[in-house]
Structures are given as C-alpha cells and as structure tokens.
Amino acid sequence: MALLTNITILLTSMFYIGVGIKHFVDPNWFLIIIPPYLQFIGIELVYISGFFEILFGLLVLMPKYRKIAGYGIILLLLAVYPANIYLAFNKEAQDLIGISQFMALWVRLPIQFVLMFIAYSITGERAKKKIVFLSFIANFVIVLFLPYPISIIVIILLLFFLFYSLFINSD
Image (cartoon, rainbow, N blue to C red; front, side, top):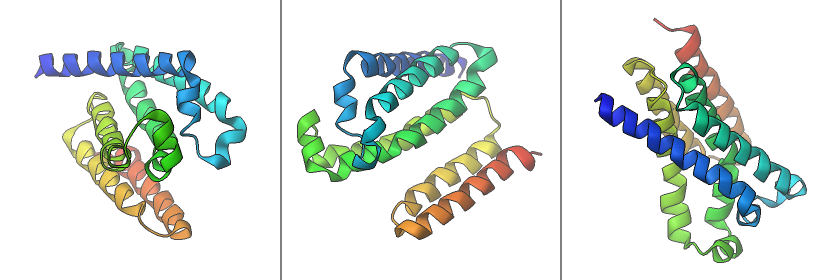
C-alpha cells in the first residue's frame, strides 16, 4: 500500500508541476477556456493558477506540507471548475483547443472530481473523513444541475457541512 501511495504522490506532483508550467509556456491555451465574465483578468488568472499548481505540486513531495498541498489542490480544482464548465458548453472554445464536446462534458468535468479525490487521498485523513469528502463531491456534482440562485445557496450549505464534519466535529 505504501508503494501505491508513493507512486500516487509522485504522479500527482509531476502532473501539477507539468500543467503549472504549461500555464506559463502556453497561456493562450488556458485563456480560451476562461468564461467571458472573467476574461477582464484572464491572463492574471492563468498565471496565478499556474503558480499554485507548481507550488502544490512541489509541496505534495514534502510530507510536512502534503496535507496543505492536498487541500490546496482541491480548492484550486474547485476554483477552475467554471472554466471547465464553460469549455463543456462552448463549441468555439472546444474547437480552438481541439477537444470534442463529449470529451469536455463527459470526461473532463468528471475527471476534476477524480483529481479532487486523489488530492484528498494523499492528505492522510482517516477513512471516515474520506467518506464525508466523497459525499460532498457527489452532492456538489448534483448541485451543478440546480437552477442558479438555488445552487449557490446549496453549495454554501454543503461547504459549511463539509468543514463542520471534517474539522469541527472530528472524533
């Protein structure tokens, strides 16, 4: 089991460092998928997210900071999720980066949650907390299909219960 964990940590680190570097080498690729309402600070968002991907990718390698890195990756994935949603429903953006709607909608969106689970799994949290976290992810996906004002309220409530379950009510 330790070997699998170490391989996961190494691959996670390499993945985020590699993607983070791509933010600086090819920022236009990421600018294409930024939703229109965020394009006024688009390049800054690309560089900031790239910086944090590299930072968390490096911190994952250090046992002392692995938990912080895991949670940081999760927050980063949640922060960039609107770009993935925009890509999934915008044909022009799909054409510009060369991805099909099927891949954007049915592969890229769900993979974000797999990546969140991987990031969480390397934090070293106990099994009970992992179940709470998986429940949060499942509910978060369901909430995405609710109408706009209701979805924001439910997401805020879900975040409250998640933090309560993970940090305040820890047994």
